[in-house]
Image (cartoon, rainbow, N blue to C red):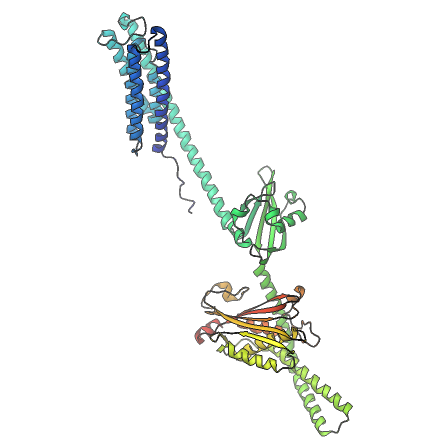
Length: 591
């Protein structure tokens, strides 16, 4: 919503409509009050409810009620109310004049009702309406008195002194006094009405400014990319912006006015741990592990500070938090990449300095073994030398995975994953590393492909399946392999490659292939999961600690992701997202 758009305000016509409604209501109340008062006086004097003056009063009261009904019916169809207001004012003047005629003309005590009508005209129509009403009231009153004095009309007599009994000089006095009072009331009431209108206009402007500021404040709060949560003095949540909803998974309606301790105990704990945080002069920051509403664990960076008013009184607490999960994953990836680079430099030196002499040593030993007649003890020693030379050569071969230059892209081709995995499964079942009673379940659709170098893909699958087999007990177990295609628009969880960060669709593969390798082995302890992809980290007695590191490096080279899910005593699942098979042009662009 645009904060520059003026908010709806009460227009002058709407305000006049409200005043006209009040005028109709007050007219009925005032009329019945004074007519009832006059009737009481008349009844007290004549002891009759059907005297001629009372009959006229009844007719007048009925006329007022009938006119009010007509006003209400017309009122519903009007869009502008100036003419309707003026018409009601004119009718009110005529009704007051008729009331004066009924109650004695110049002797009537109700001449002040003209002033009430003039005040109503000034309130509804301001100075022009007030002066117009005062002029018409003066004409009506003067005409009534003059006609009565001339004997042309004979009002109903409620007083003992007839109008014809006044001398001319005495007759002018009430006319001058009343007409002057009419104009004075018109000017004063119009002035007050105009002041009220100006005050109302200024108040509306201030109200609009306040509403705009409140709206702008709300927009600012809702568009802050960090989660914002504020507490009152009782620890109840009073502000919860959109970013907070996205981070925590909770809707604002579900948490507002709820105690922080009940909704987010993890956030409440850091405030309690810090003590009386609201008395702290500066904000405090902390990083915590937080469980979202969907039971996903994330890393939160939380800052909180006291909420105070202009004079420093404590109003509550402000909490600002951000989801640092991807940031921490990126840090871990950078840290692991640095270690892999260091190992790569080491591997280059080792491969160059050791491989050639090692090959000479191994070849020489094998030639000696064939040419010499050895006793069993010497033959066993030579076998150990050959075997360990082969192991050392294998270790150096693993090292070279980190030393290979990555400046030129590896040749890629669409590989049918089912065929490749069948080959690896056959190799594993014939491997001495394969435990007895091993059951392998494959769920690989025929059309699932990956865009990779064949040797690299085979090495990934082999290392992961061998790792799964080695995690099984000697009595056997189960390995399940499944794969599926993720269509365009899918972003692998934890994908922090430049293509994922920049949002450039041309750099992303058009689709991904998800590969899951699950075993029923012993599982990986939580404290070891962060380090399983580090070089030389292993929990096996005869392992080099490079198998998973090589897998991680290859997956990273292709812009994919790898994650691990494990429960101790239940098993481990590796989840990989690799670029699906597609055209060479797209593959080279992604590369």
